[in-house]
Length: 231
View (cartoon, helix red, strand yellow):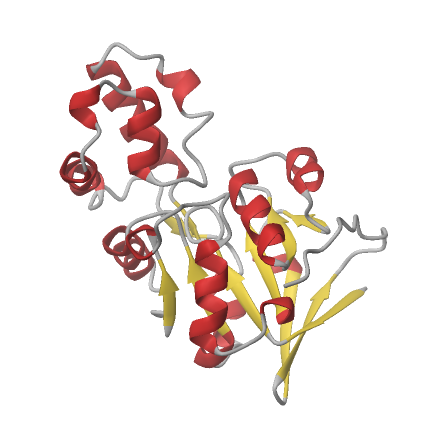
């Protein structure tokens, strides 16, 4: 058993708390088809980044506006095919007081709130979404903003992430990261800097002890420790 002490936890949303993989990848493939793009190649690049950033990198100029990105999200935010809470999520969040966790997501606030509500997850006290930052992941801006909002030192957080861009952002901010193997392979998550990689949140138990948390992982192998940033 592995025990990790921390002051707070930050979660990505898509692929970490809520499994939206089926509908998200389907929507991007449909949009790619409309513009003559290779959908299978495109979905290799969509996870862990803002919708608008993906549109601006891969789609023609008429798709580069914030209005276009918002309309695109509105097209399929109520499509619930394959949507489910990642196993163990309800128990993990119920163990935490609202001032000890946050959601930091590359999705818009509308998208994140809707998806969490669709699977019955509680709304976080602090959510930093794509709307709230100038630079998306892998920039650490979102994680730093969430730590400030919760008034906890960034080094006191453990982050759960499923995408390489998110892992890089969290490490750059100064956090320890546990990978969730949903949209990315275990090998890629560990290579990006995760100390451990889990299949879902049933493999984690969070225990509150005063103003501290203990994360319990059923693991025997040693962690893969990347260099941690100091701020």
